[in-house]
Length: 486
Ligand SMILES: [Cu+2]
Image: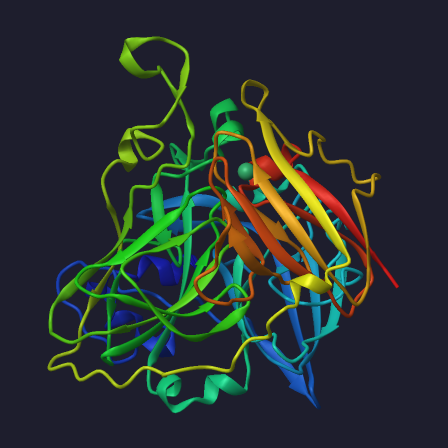
């Protein structure tokens, strides 16, 4: 879904013709038959001078080719997913956003520890207007982040129409030889729901469950092939979907988790599969030890969605307890096929990264409780029984203090909880301590889960928000405000 001409030349049969417009990463790639080669999303053009980096993003409707048909999408700079914004720790950034849509929008720089007075979650940029996001990237910002719109009430429709992009921040640890030796790819996982050749508008079921699209795209492409040049891969995964969960498994290969939402973990964690809830990111490494083609699959996942028709032939609605949300999702879906290089000889994985700060939970100055609930038939979602009100301050905290938040999901459905601007660590889930330490900004809660997180309110004052990252739920009330004072 980048630009039309390039997109039409995507099939490998046309690769020779497309040499002039294909991104550099695909040069030299060879493919047979009609497979679609994985396309790297273009980089956002930036201007760098004396530590200042300037870039422009414009949200604009463009017809793009998706899975063989022309679809009118909301894009950033005529690309969906939007171009990758590549930054470095310590950068001073001046990002100018212009809204060319016919409705208010804005940018949320999801994952960055920057001031809520810059990453203004309640700002509305009117059609035709621009806004400058100016900030510095503090130490520890490195990781796989992303950007997307955040105007309450418009988020679900704008993201479903294509608005989101990856934002990669590199830091000193990215220079580790084991990481440099690996082949890196940014994979934006974003599904698309179409009605004919147009974006499907939300119906009541979409507002209840969060909209899932039948096209499960990787970098805007349907089932592309990644022809690896090297035998060790570093995959930066972004779940930019409105509501779809990805339970990822690579055939015959474990995934070595090296980073979560907030950057590197302390040492690689071997996983047979990885669950990525909406809004979450992860970085995994893969060692291809033999030749062949291996499918990256999305396995079925039950998140308690409602279904029409009901079980046992009864009418009305029921929870999708026996299926992964809908019958189409009851089987694994191939997202991407990885083809190993010939005679693969993987380079070693890093053995460890920097140790992560241990937060002293005993020193927390406040314990807050957030209870999740829903009125499913009205598609209304609540924190502490309240629907979002931008004029109400739900929590007031003090800059420089540590808080413990107890998140309790009393609804019948999973909800991924996201807090802006202030990364947190998960203390425990249902009393079970987290198996490894990590910085996070999204944590998924299954039905009945009680998850405790440690939230340091560091560095910045201002008004920000926390919300469910099934963005339909966010638009339908599941959001609250946090004010951090000096
Ligand atoms: Cu939710």
